[in-house]
Length: 216
Image (cartoon, rainbow, N blue to C red):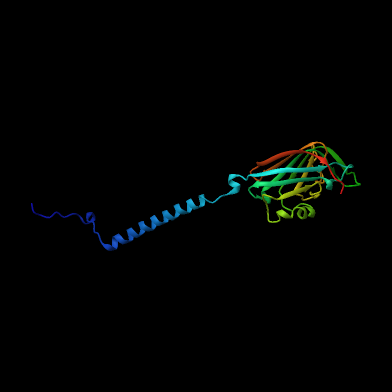
């Protein structure tokens, strides 16, 4: 009756400071690690990512001056666009598409080259100065910081495109091998679309009638 029961050795639990301390330390480190992961995740969630949520901007088509040869030269075609508010637009992520009636040159001058007229689509693959005539950068020095920001006005020109390796492409009807210059027919309606790349999300769309270009 009064005998003390003994248990097999493997069933005996021994509590010592040496056994408890490593376990408690491990659990504490695990808890701290999980806490830090949670704090980091919450912090990153609060960081804005303009390209993820989509850029927004109020862009106004202030003026289109144009015409087609032989009335005016391509370099006398000007499109003035104003950023009136919203996100700064990173130049490498903005594409501009111009749709309307006009012309471009195809082929080599004096070697079978010619002016083609019809439905024109002009695409600025980005707003960077690379792949454009040098006058583009001089004319648009306000975006030299890499962004088109509120209050800034940019001017596009019918001679912005280069013949080869151009970031301005011009198509007339089904003809794509143009010199990437363009003229817009006066008195016609032109649509200008501002598009975010690479998502192809439309930021702004506006239209206006082409006014007769001023002789310069």
